[in-house]
Amino acid sequence: MSGRVRPIEKFAEAVGKCSVEAAAYGKCIVADYQSVHQDMCAKEFATLKDCYLKAAKKP
Image (cartoon, rainbow, N blue to C red; front, top):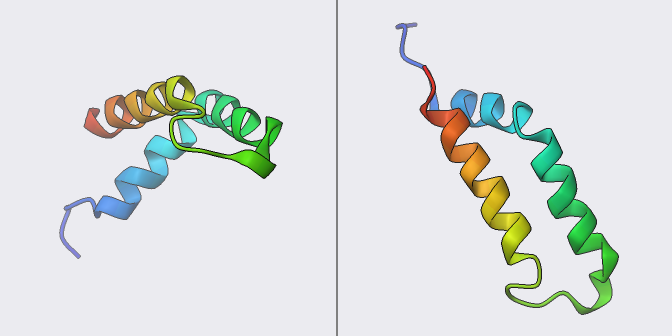
């Protein structure tokens, strides 16, 4: 196989680097999981997304 990194491998590595952010988002969702609605945890999600994007950009 070539030296190319598959997207899923990149994503898996990024996920591993964002465990704190993922935990914060998860806690927010679980806090009121019976009435989850759009943008309920928008701040936590944005932080998690930014972490994923930053981690995925690093070589």
